[in-house]
Length: 56
Image (cartoon, rainbow, N blue to C red; front, side, top):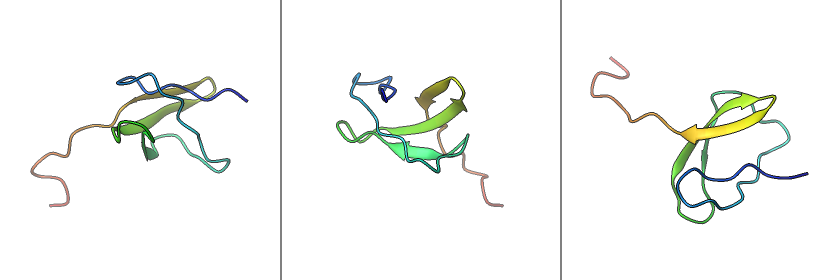
C-alpha cells in the first residue's frame, strides 16, 4: 500500500488501519500537523490552526 505524502516535506505518512476522516496526524519526518481530508481517495492537508475561541 502506498502512503500519502506530507504536503510540507513530501515524506510518506503512514495511515493507521482504523483512521477516520478529519483525524489529525503528525508527519514522521517534519512533525507537521496534518488532517485526513478524505479516505477514498486518501488525501492529507495541513491541520487547521487552533483558534482562540475553540473550546468555549
